[in-house]
Figure (cartoon, one colour):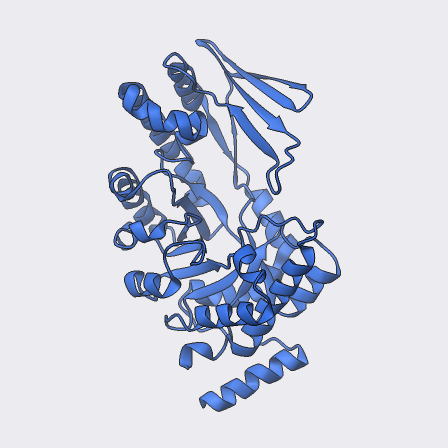
Length: 381
């Protein structure tokens, strides 16, 4: 189709409110290297709420990127958990046959977008390692595929559901979950032997978890996240072997492997990401917040790789409609084959009950309108 005819078709579809494909079809097209009618527009299901605004956006093509649905449940048969709440402090004590550890967190957080703040992590000193390793080795997994099917039915053509998948043992999704950033930074150097035992226990747990992930009905599988806690040296030492081990096995099961790329320092991984074998990245956040542009990423990682881009709403939407429109058009013109990117807001910290709600709504509508007008043609311009 000539470019002028395509432009005219895109404008008429926007003006008439018509859509050639449903959101799920559009997302599946880019994930399977097919050409969508236009760039998918997405957000997390929790960001817009329900009601007239959400319906208006969906009528303009918005769909939901759903990633919180578990496909696996777990239990620790030989561990008991005691929970106590005093005011805003929740304390949990984990009791095992070889000892106990505890966590403490502030609930009812007053910080926007944060429901709780951890004050005390499980591992605080050398003695806690053996207890936590016992807990990890005691963990038993069970399939929970019914929850995935239920979510699929709930969202239908308006959502794409990502399976939670597996994570590297080294970073915040692994050892960091038990140590917190400060202790994680210190302990691997002060107690390297114990830290190494923790990593090995987490590796054993991942190997037990993997068959249930591979057998799950989810096609799109989360494979960890990029982490600002460490740089390319640690990524190459710890994360690359994880990807080299599991990504080919997931590909053999016809899974699409996606990394959660919310790190704002992705430029340091520019040369390493292609070595992972991953298929896609979500929550990729370009400048002015992240330090790697979409055009740079596509040039380095190729247009067969899929980029689900998080538009940094607070930095962009506050500049007004014109600047937001220009920002979206620049993203659409960043390169690629036309079936390699999706756009949306998946990392927002705005609360729609605050004074920022009108700005967020105006920005989201601007993104939707711009994609409807330009999302089918910018790759050809």
